[in-house]
Image (tube, rainbow over the protein chains, first blue to last red):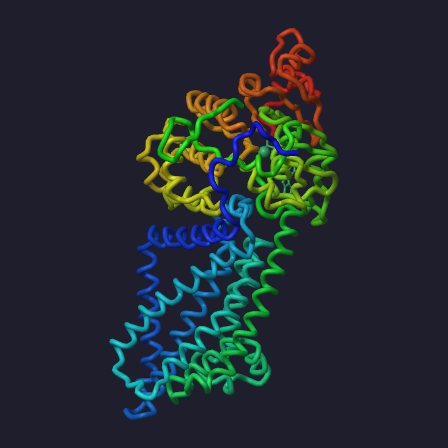
Length: 283
Length: 296
Ligand SMILES: Nc1ncnc2c1ncn2[C@@H]1O[C@H](COP(=O)(O)OP(=O)(O)OP(=O)(O)O)[C@@H](O)[C@H]1O
Ligand SMILES: [Mg+2]
């Protein structure tokens, strides 16, 4: 049934990939615009981040001068920096839905013809970029403030662990993003609770061995436990890329399981929201 | 639809370029733009007194065909199901019963495809309030794959046409009046070149001049874009003026769907007004309603 009298498509139709990539870019750009608009807050938060990290490092300086003190400062600074990065990742991903709800744009974004995976990918790409930039700024602050030596550090090893552990953290963020989809306020509250638990069980500022018995078992469930342990190993003891390769593989695999699970759950939750009318009701 | 010249991004005074999305889909000309078949939707709500869930029927068995190129108006009292119907078409709600088809495609099974064919304007203009109109439009159209350069040029054309000066595009949206925001919302919908536009009370809260501008624009969009438009409104004159047919919905069911002149002849009483049609079809007397005024 070829129609002959209709002019052919006037503009080259976008390929699916091109369309989806533009979607990712649209999200990243929007978040950048938001940061620019809330620049005052951004600077205040960053200032607080830097000071917070410094004060935690300063706890180490209370020790008598020497190698142990040096080590303690670095140990604490790594904890603060990593927590900074991972919590930004988690927050950005899980708050993405929350933002759109508050502004009321959620119906528009979810009505757009892009795959949910693409939407969430855009959110994740942004989260990683943003987390890295903010953490780097804090890192510069720390380096200028503490003149501690990390001569033994194997930075490539540390970088590998960090990279690998972003993946399960994005997965966790996706799972957490479901909560605001189901219930606006409760969702935001639950996200805070999850983040708090992760902070407690992952050994951010102490070895997980010091946790009381009733909770210490939970530390194995947090990917951050391994990130912290192995990044510290690389920076403090010079664990090389080959030494951290196995755990990086495990973290990556963990993420590769969590991400599809998170996405699947997200899509189920979205379906539920469309059924009960939870996206928005007035109008 | 005779030879409408090729329009470039930079060229022409056409309100926007129209990428032809329907032709490659091989949709025959007599396929209705929208077909609603026995659609029902009931929400659940917690009763504040008993704390128990109770059903809230929103739409109850709607049937509707909207041919291509038509402007269909939907009139009905508050809570009669207008927005629910529009959301069901817009893939923002799943129906309990029945089916919705857009250009012959089922909205559930071909969700992505349908989403490319439609867009919607809601009563409240929903935007990132701290971002400018230009930034909001960049985001919204980016999700549809529209290159930003194209979107910005077209946005300026459309908004100029709607009487919104270009300088309003670069201030935070919260600084725009409600009517101005609504115009940006209309541009947002149009920028993705929908072939079925769903307008949920697009002129509510606009001054008479802005309302006229939007109405003229809706007519223009239909004429230049081969678009089909479903518009809900509380403005009787608006329905009368711009709609080819008007559907009166009451308690989730259509009381009548017809051309407004026919509705007026049949239900308009002596006055022959749309207002009288409205009251007749929702089963109330005009003067009764006057006495009830002030109720929610
Ligand atoms: N998401 C939802 N959850 C629960 N109930 C809902 C939801 N959306 C709509 N309703 C209920 O369904 C009914 C129909 O609402 P709808 O918004 O479709 O009415 P409307 O005709 O658009 O009204 P208005 O003229 O005030 O915009 C109302 O009783 C409303 O309270
Ligand atoms: Mg409504």
